Image 1: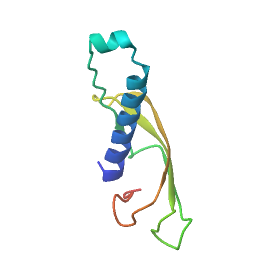
Image 2: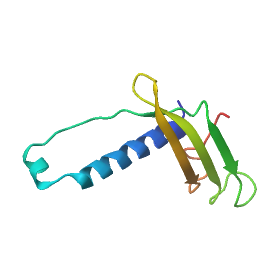
Image 3: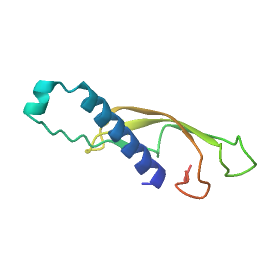
Length: 98
C-alpha cells in the first residue's frame, strides 16, 4: 500500500469521525459509545488522473483526481473514495505506481 493510499484512508476516517462527533447530542455525552471504522482506499484499481498544473514535473499546485473503491477491513467493497489532492510538498507523499 502506498503512502498516498494510507493518507487517503486516514483522511477519510478522520472526516467520518468529525461528522459523527458533530452529530452527537448532550445525551450521547453521558453514555459514550466508541465506534471504530476501518476503511481502505484501493489505489490499485479505479481512476487516478495526474494533472500537471505548475512547473513541468512534480511541483506545487499539481493535482491528482481519483475515484477508487472503498473497502472495509475484510477488503470487501463498501463504497467509493472520490476526490482530489493538490500537491504542496513535491517529493514527499508522492503518488507512485500507476
